[in-house]
Amino acid sequence: RTPYLLDARELLARAEIISGEFARAEREASAVIALGLKSAAAYGTRAYSRAATGRLEEAIADGQEALERDPSWSSLRGFLAFWRVKLGRPKEALPEYDRLLEENPDHVEHLLGRSLARFLTKDLAGARTDAERASRLDPKNATAFLRLGLATDDDQQAIDHFARALELKPKWSEAYAASAGRYLRLKDLKMADIAYSTAVRHEPQEPRWWLQYALFMLQSLRLKDADSLFTEAIRVAPDSADAFLYRGRTRFLLEKFDLALEDLQKALALQPSLDTSDFREMIEAAARALGDAADALFVPGRSAPAPEGALRLFTASGERDEAGRTAKEILILHEKEGYAFGEIGVTARDLGPYRAALCEA
Image 1 (spheres, rainbow, N blue to C red):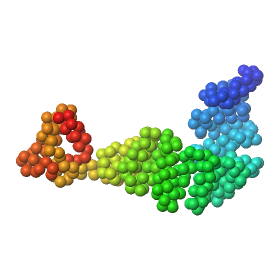
Image 2: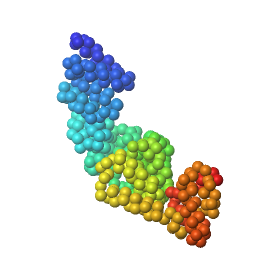
Image 3: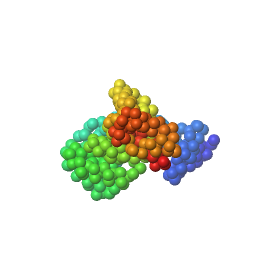
Image 4: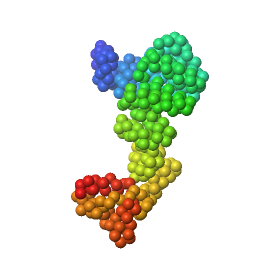
């Protein structure tokens, strides 16, 4: 527990940060703090290691402890502001960025950080001013042109800024998605489609692009495409309440009421705050529609026609109980009520096992 030992462990923690060993760095920094050396370096090192593993709230708490001991640690102050923005608290980040830029008005990364924080707090003029300054100071900084486009009111000018960002950083999905949003505002649906599809092609594991592309398809009433794209978003992010919510709405419009109900219930399980009167009304509407569809089973003319192989369905292997029930109902309508097979309806949800049983017969 000598000061030399504590200093050595502190240096070891900082070395492990550099080498990417974040869990070990956190352990060493925590040990130093527990043993009594509550230095700025120890808290700062633990802040960086915790942020690297996604624990931003704890990282901010440690960072504040470090800055109380060393207020001049500007790089850590910049990270604290950035972490607050990532947590969705840009207003809290602004005073930190203001202080940093008072000390160094030409710091490009801090200008871009404040530009984003101002954009998120609806200060478009301030965001634009910071981004313009950053782009002049570093004309090869793609992020500067992305931020400038986001804060620009004119859609075509914004698209031009995004194009410049893509010249500097090709295959940047974020810039393609931003372009797509502006093309959509200009009602250029073809270019919006191209930009969204390019975004998902270049970064297929990012659920945001799939979700944005799917919402574009939903807005364009290309419902089957929207369904497929929401499914991709769920594949990449299986805990996305938004993806289940909007796929449920899409499937409701496609009259896939049972699947819509499943998706809406899954969205609610993932995000209980969705339980509003509007959401409950949507679930009830899907349930009512599903009930209506069930009532239509075997009712002549109400849904898909029964194939003439219904008699074979009765003896089909596989889905025997359902196949037998279906066949009996169809035969009663055909033989006793006089309906032709083509006039007898079955609901879409029964067609899957129905066709499977026919194939096995």
